[in-house]
Amino acid sequence: MSNTPQNQDSLGEKLKVVFDSDNSDKNYNALKAIVSSVPAVGSLTVGFFDSYIVSPSMQRIRNFLEILVLELEELKSKIELIDFESPAFQTVLIRAYQIAVRTHKEQKLEALRNIVLNSSIPRILKDDILEMFLDWVDNFTELHISTLKHLHYLERYTPEQLDTYFPIGEENEAVYNQVLKDLADKGLISLREDFITEEDKGDMYWRSLAQTIHQLPVDFHIRPEKVMNLKTIKRQENINILLANCSRNGSSAQESRTTKLGKQFIKFIEYPSIQTEPM
Image (tube, rainbow, N blue to C red):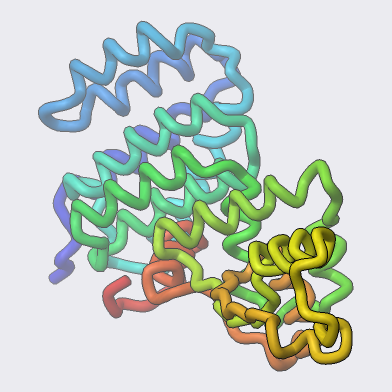
C-alpha cells in the first residue's frame, strides 16, 4: 500500500488547472484557488494576490508557474514519496512565488523553481536553514548566483573561460570583489590567504626625509639594508589574484571553492538529484 499522502494529488491538479485554459481571468482565479487551498494561510495569501498580483496578464509569472507545474509532475513520476501537503513545501511554494514576482532574472527564477522542487522531497533542510537559504536567494543578485556556481564547478572552466566570464576593468573590478566578499561573509566560499613581505612604507618615508636633510650617515647609500625595515602582511584573494591562481594552476588542478555550506546551498538551488540522503 502506498505511503503517498492522501491529498498529494490535489495541489498538482490545481496547479495544472491554472494553464488548462487560455482565458487569463480564469487562470488568475484558478491560481487564487490554489493558494486558498493551503491550510491556515490560504485566506491571508488570497488577500496578497488581490493586493499585488492585480494583472492577470503577467506573462513572466505565468511562464514561471507553467514550467514549475511541468517539473513538479515530472518529479512526482520519479519519486513516489513527494509530499505536496507538507508545511515546508507549502511555505516554500508561497515564498518562492512572492520572490519571483519581484524579479525578471532567469537564473533567479530557475533557482526558485528548483527550491520548490527540492522542498517537495522528504529530505528537506531544517526550517531555520531553509529560511536562511530563501533569504539569500531573495537578496542575491544574479551575479552572486552565477559567480557562486562558477566557483563551485571551477574545474569545468579553462582560465580563458574564466577570464571571459570575469572581464576585469576599473569599472567592474570592485563589483566582483564585493560579490566575492558577500559570498565569503555568508560562509559559502573560501578565499585563500597568503603572506607577502614588503618594505614598511612609513619607514621609507622617514628615511627619505632624513636623507633630504642630511641626517643619514654617508654609508647609507652603500649599505641601505642596515636601516631598512620590512613587514609581513596577510592578503586575501581578490578577483585578480583568484584568476591569476587559476591561470597558473590550470582548470584540471582547480578545486571547488565552495564550503560545505556553499555546497549545501548549491544543491538547494539546483534541479534535485534523485536520491534520498539528507541535503
